[in-house]
Length: 269
Image (cartoon, rainbow, N blue to C red; front, side, top):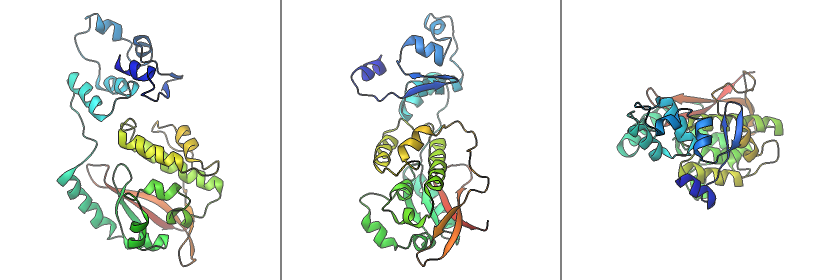
């Protein structure tokens, strides 16, 4: 009922709901919920089902209802399932960032330390040399915490200027970045922090086919492999004019996906 009120008053953006072959606007109606998510919903309302639906169905219900993390956890707890925290905060985050930082500064390749939102918490000196800027100058030019997606798609960023791709190549690199981000944050797409960043990224438009909004809307976050070359690599020009090729690579610590290190490894084609 609350979702239908938000929909009617324009408080909620409602993209198409996709399940199987379906692609239709959400109505948040009992009929659509039954048809697209939980066929036993009417039976449950009549009291004939005494056990909660499977955990996977609860998560699909949360996705359909566009729940944020707190609302999704409430649904899971009400159904008797444990929740899984998506974020580390405070001392837990600091301890894990310290581990990833140590790794980043031990490798020679340009490496960024990022959290789930792709905010950059640190980078090794090779990363700044790679972009041709100093740590202080880049920090001084930023109005907020640096973000790796910002650096990739903002034409004015030093990382974007370093990457030397034609429009098709840039579209492929952007597709890889967006797919990775959406895949890793599939349970976060109704979170305020993601919606805020998405609004900012949509404003940083690039010429088609490397247009961020078009790529974001087109990328299907299904877990399937991307249709990219097996040895996809990015030609770059270093600050000293040297030309070489790199491949993005994520280093994930045991037992948690983020924070992580994202490196640009030199490769030979």
